[in-house]
Image (cartoon, rainbow, N blue to C red; front, side, top):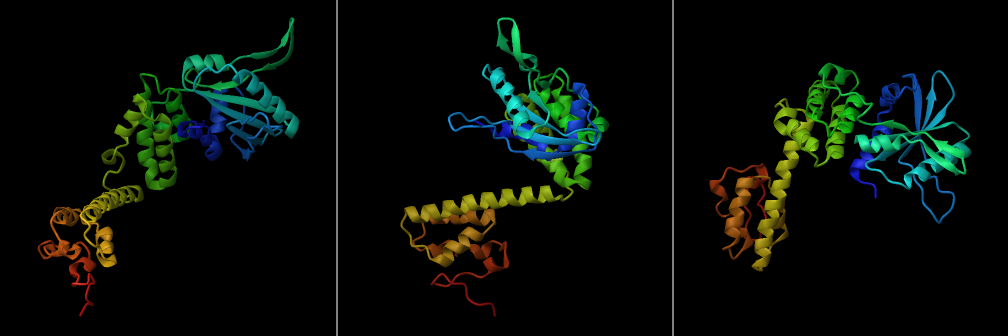
Amino acid sequence: MVTSAHEGMHRIFQERPEILAPVFGVLGVPLPEKATVDAVTTDVTEARPLERRVDTVLRIGPSDGEDFLLAIESQSKKKKDKEASWAYYVAYLQAKYRLPVLLLVVCQNPATAKWAAGPFDCGTRGWTAQRTYPLVAGPDNLPVITDARTAAKNLALAVLSALAHAGSARSGAILEAIDKALRELQDTDPETAGYFFDFLEINLGSTPAGEKWKEIMSFVSYFPGRGTVRETAYLEGKAEGEARGEAKAVLAVLEAREVPISDAVRERITTSTDLDRIDGWIRRAVTVTRAEDLFDEDADVPPSTPEEAWPLDSQGIAPPMS
């Protein structure tokens, strides 16, 4: 089953292909920064009985040579049947697309990375028919990036470094460097900053590194009161969500007591965003005999919207403004 973290691990290569050049650099495989990157179907199933899917397949068009396919797999632990699957992926993709194929396995712990490096042989009686050599990106070869300036220059690689070293004692320093880089980036490119913020939150999950990231990127540190789009959306969404929950409570009490609720009353309750006012309605919902009586004491509370300044009449309808 593909989890959000698993999905996010390989989507970064699709959505942020600039990470490929530095990753290939640490793997010792030259790749120019200028290259075309196109997603290829990940379905490598030839027949119905067995489904085989690669996490990500990219067609790379380097500026200095022939195109090739890059199959990317995210592996969290050793899994024996993957040895045969990876060999199949390489052979099938080469046969289908008539292009060279490289396999990159992204790991988050040293033991899995060591196993994933292979090589994996298919053969018998001293003869090897096929040998698979995956490229492996993991904590052993991805750099530990703790300098904010370095992280800012190659944010995608820094983020992948944070994932690969999530179990390291230095993970906190990596995340703090990314935090500083994102703070600078959010003023000029909030979309990209938001992408990496969400990417790390999903992929680090509830791990200790994930909790550290949530602490670093809490509301106070990430939104320093500058009215950014992300800050405004956060505040508005939180207030609206709380108001909707309180409004449902008002209606639930009235319905449980079988007090009739007109459409006008229901609309007024559900569209209010004044939490103090709604709290008062909840308390009065326990005793009123008419839903309209909820609003009898509203004159004592400053209205939060122009519409709420006009009380409903006995039929639950607001009179026209004079």
